[in-house]
Length: 88
Image (cartoon, rainbow, N blue to C red; front, side):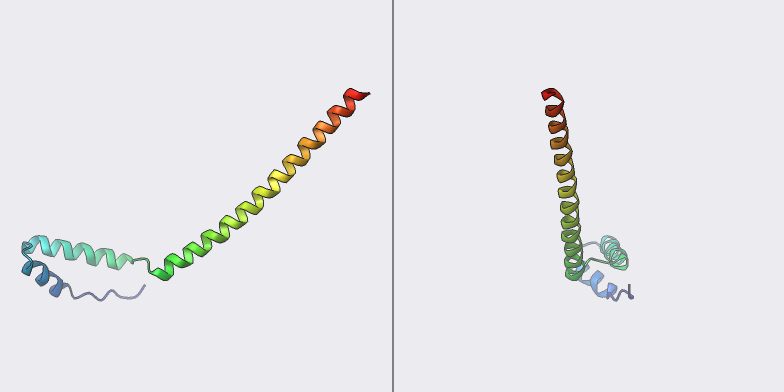
């Protein structure tokens, strides 16, 4: 992540001009600066995560389909074996 470029002095002045007490304005700007340093998700970040989640969902559905098919095959085999055993 690159360096955060915020005009904190200008932000504090704008808050003070809007009637926010100086200490509160400074605290709010410090909080915004701290959050910005940690980084915000961009639209591109969110789109990338959405694509990854879609791909993960597709893989999960494929695996679950395979498991369901296997379980159905086992159930049919058990039913057939049970029926054949009772017919004898």
